[in-house]
Image 1 (tube, rainbow, N blue to C red):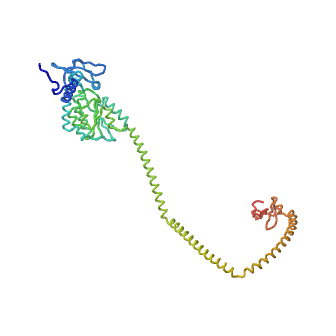
Image 2: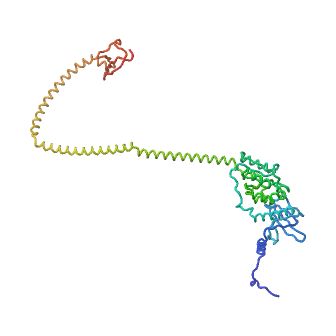
Image 3: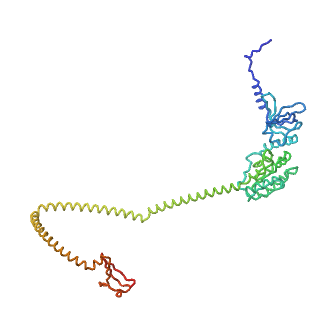
Length: 447
């Protein structure tokens, strides 16, 4: 019996590593592919995921479709149903089971349409009909919107409702067309060409409600794709529901998930416009106010500059300079006079020492003594006379009219004559009213 030396083997794989490597190999070797077959052993556990098998007459394969993907389908598969399944190849590592992870499932009738769809999509993409460089921008503020759809379907009601809510003053032109059946595609092409010939609108909406792939097939026709591509007016497609994609969506200048969303794409929101206008108004007011402030500041600076250059200011500056010169001249003059006064005082002092003023002072001193004695005698005599005069004045004051005046009375005189009656007075006469501390010159206004 031969023994294998494990230490000399190339490499030993664990089961987990083997399954993981196999999964990487499978997923890297097979792209996303379509598989046709019959469903069997279909089950839905509490998780919501779908588990089933796909089989034909001679083989089967395990399949799984996770909840986020199966919720987008419009039906629930059943055992025995013949379907087309878009899936990726993988390996479930936990059991080592080869399986397919489904992304999308269609009944076999739709499967053929799907193949035709993918073939046309590939051919048109290679022809450049989907290139972003050919996409026309939508107008920011359209003046008219054209709608190409069935005039009796739910899509037109949704579109009109959205347009009325968002921009009620916007004109709308409806180009009625069939959106389902064999005649729908030529009708759609005719509506697109008519709108471009009449040039009544800024932007077009091509729309219809949801449906099966067969219902939406007119929007997958090559003639419709070329009509959209050749349109001079920008076209927004709003075909089906959010999960539905048609050739028209790829060729259109913009794709909307629903007809209502297409109406929102082509129109501005009037409330947003009003709010933006309010912001622009506030910004305009601020700009004008700032400009006015700048102009006022400029005007103030100009006025100051003008005042500085005004002849009146120049005269004031010259007058101030003249005042400074005058003050300087006066200061110099006073200095010169002070110098002369000092010289004069010095000369007088010299003369004082040379004059007979000392003898004169002695004689003057004697004269002052005699004058003082004479003054004392005169003062005593004056005091006695004042005393006598005071006694006489007191008696006279008691009888004097001035004492009466001191008590608040007044003497009215006209032409130096005392007035004793109003009979001697006329209106307009000038009179003098003597008071205790002075007199008033008055004019008579009433007698």
